[in-house]
Image (cartoon, rainbow, N blue to C red):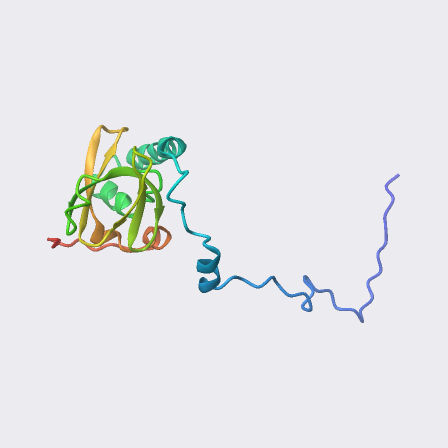
Length: 172
């Protein structure tokens, strides 16, 4: 009926989960990544239309965040500070560099100190977060929010785990 298999284990051989003689592949250093231009976005050949689906995904993400924090506006503001902005359409409203004021585009890359956006004219612009004020519009609630770049001066992954303290004023 039911056949049983008997397996004998030799007590002299230890059972290991992995072979310690095998080494993992060597990871690239930061200077090697820079030399290979892993994180560089080409200035030409990138089109605004290619990133519109990313913006639609981001709007769905914001709709979900808004529905979770709808009962408390302070709670939603905290979630907005911790949010990922890849795909968001941002507009520079104030900046220490007057040439950047009015720049609008989809965020295609976010680093610790800057946003890289693509404009409707298919130009890639690097906008520093420091001393800059951004405006983000949400379709889900038909409202816009002002974001101070000084509060976003961390990478998106680190910002998600960070606890923010309320500050009364922000200098530009």
